Every structure is written in C-alpha cells, then in structure tokens.
Amino acid sequence: MKRFADFKVAAKFKAYPPDVRARLMALRETIFEVAAVTPGVGVLTETLKWGQPSYLTGETGSGTTVRIDRLNGDGGGYAVYFHCQSGLVGQFRELCPEAFAYKGKRAILFGLGTQAPARELRHCIALALTHHLRKKRKRGGVIVSPTG
Picture (cartoon, rainbow, N blue to C red):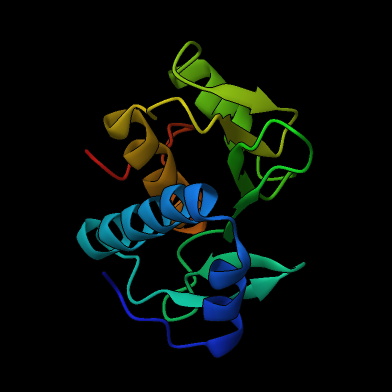
C-alpha cells in the first residue's frame, strides 16, 4: 500500500466508514498502479480538491485531475470523478457502455456490493491521466490510446 504524503488526505481516508474506506483505498492503489505503468504520466501528486482525494499529473501535466469520494446518501457507494468539460465520461460511455454506472459528464459510480471491472476501470483511468498528452499527440483527428 502506498503511504500518504499529505496528512490531510490521510485524515480524509481515516474519516470514511470502514467499508467505504476499503473500496476507496483499493481505487487509490489502482490509480497509482496505472500511473506507474502508463508512459508519459510520471509521479502523481495526491492532494484534496473540493474536499476529495485528488490525483494530479503535476510532474508531466499529461492528464486531467482524477478525484475519488464516497457518494452522499443512503446508498453507501463511491465514485471516481473527472473534469466535466474534458469529455472523458462520454468517451467512457462509448468504450464501456455496460461496464459502469455513470453520472452526467462527471463520474463513474460504484455500489459497495459491486465489483468494478478491473480492465475497463484501469483503461478509463489511463485515459484520464493521459488526456492532455493525447490531445497534444492528435494526428489526423485520431486520438492515440495510452494503451496502444
């Protein structure tokens, strides 16, 4: 498990109910793992943005911020959030229409009792972490995928 570099982020995770914390910790690990194996991403910065654990590609500027948090309400779920103007959630809907529940242009939603499809989730995270890099590499109107 990756250690927390920011005590405010660590405190945020500690404040989650145990079941939500376990899911968010697994999602956090996935984000760091994807960043480590995705060319061009570099070291992530972990911080709080809007009170949510957030992952930035500050070293390279290759991608857009990825945020994670619990869902408000009785459902007890959690979500991964993306910049709503990036168009990423629309891309995810096209690539994985049945794999996830989506909220508008902003989020992929998860219930505590559901298992997120790992391959699809990793691909979506890689797309977010390379969003700016891919925009720069656009050739002939075709966006280059981070995984090939």
